[in-house]
Image (cartoon, rainbow, N blue to C red; front, side, top):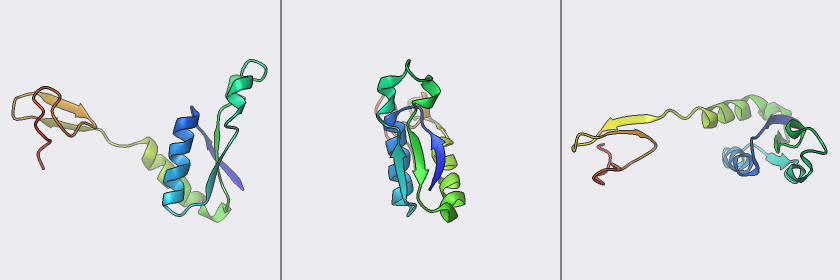
Length: 100
């Protein structure tokens, strides 16, 4: 087994593990209950960790994790003239869907 990374919280760790598993990488989350002892232990030692089972999948897992952590943000102009940024697929001002 190989520790791939630490996650900032349990939700992100679960998302990463699920995405890795979906891509065929055997992954698991460790230390998900250690957040309750932060203060007794250093906080950085209580973060949840993402582990992979097979070391030969490390490169694939790191590539997938990098892609998950660096999703490009979109920017598009709506017909109403509003500049829409981020992951929105509809204009926040008028509700029109993002053009194709």
